[in-house]
Length: 257
Image 1 (cartoon, rainbow, N blue to C red):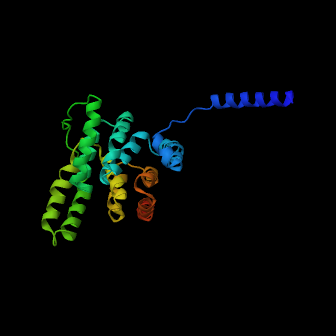
Image 2: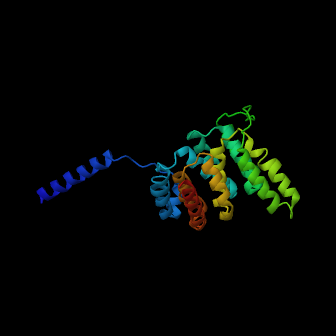
Image 3: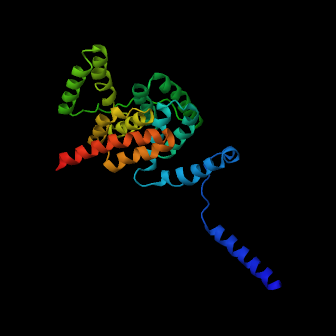
C-alpha cells in the first residue's frame, strides 16, 4: 500500500509540474459567462481568442478594425468600448478609429455612428487621448477610369429614380468620404466589407470586394473576413457572404489569365 501511495504522490507531483510548464491561456470571457454559460466561456477563450484571433491570415490590427466595424454597424454599443481599447493596443490610431466610425455612418446609419462616438470617447478619456483632428495630408486620388465607370453606373441605375441620391453618392460618398486621408484606402475597404457582411447586405459585396482588392487587400485576407465575423455577426451572415465572394474571386482569376 505504501508503494501505491508513493506512486500516486509522484504522479501527482509530475502532473503538477507539467501543468506549471504549460502556458496559462488568457481568460477573456468574464467570470459571469462561466457561471451562466460555461460553454460560451470555452468557445470565447479557447476558440475565438485562443484560435481565431491568433490566425496569421489577418494581423491583430486588422481583426480589431473588422470587429469594431461589425459592432458599430450592428449597434452593439455595450461591446464597443472594450474592442476600441483592444484596437488601440493592437496599433490602431485614435484618428483611425474616429474615421472608421465616420465611414460607417454612411454604411450603417448616423444613429449607430453617434452611439459609437460616445463609447469611443470614454475609452479615449480614460487613456488621456485628446481631441482628434482631421488629417492635413493630401486627399486620396481615386482611379479616374474606375471612377468614371462608377459614376456612369450610379447615374444610370440610381439617377432616374432618385437623382438626389445619385448626386450625393457621387459628390459626398465617393467625391469626399472615400478621398479622406484619415484612413488608408485598404483599411476603408476592409471596414466597409466587414460592415456589409455584419448587417447582412451581401448584394453590395461584389463592388466593394473588387474595390478592396484593387486597394491592396489580398484574396486570402478578404476570405478571412467572414470567418472572423462568424463570431461577431453570426454564422448565417458569414455564410451568406461566401458565394458572393467566390464569384468575385473567380471573376478576378479569369481576368488574370
